[in-house]
Length: 111
Length: 112
Image (tube, rainbow over all chains, first blue to last red; front, top):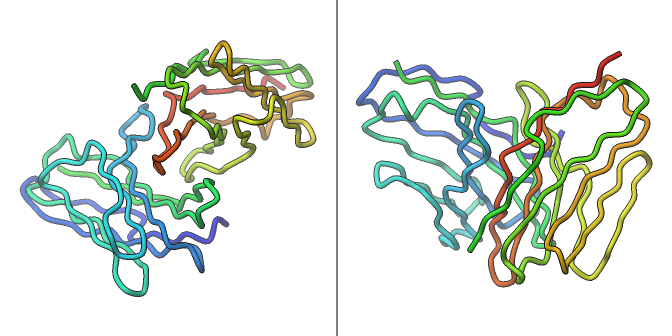
């Protein structure tokens, strides 16, 4: 158990809809990262937050947004969903030493 | 730029034999090189890492070597066991950049 909690574990929705994925980092970790893993693909970096502020941005679509709240949990919002958005979405947290600890992921299926 | 090549993409090894996975990076400012293991239906799990001031690190049956001149690092698993079957990802981080960039993964299968 990495200590990173993600909800929901599975989500099925239709094209055009909007979903929110939630992440609680390890206790004490200030950084939260979001990654996307499509079928048989590697992990693509989406965005990073540090103590509530956006720190780095990767290949995140304009339809996607994220935020980190004062209690350090983070949410990833995916809107106007397309079939190609079906993927595993991982959250990871870090205490600053470099190591990332990943949650179990949220599997999104867009029908 | 930020790029890492990982080879092989699949690897089958007889139980008890050794497995080696190699990654090559391009950015000489890279300074942190972790390896992650991802089992089916789970998130990636950090198994070992190495920093640019060290050439080799070992943890029981797992070792990582770093060749900064050639810009490659390798994961070595000795005395492989069935529970080593998983997808392994290399990754790297560069100075001043907190994100990890991942390789494309190696699916390792241990044959009993």
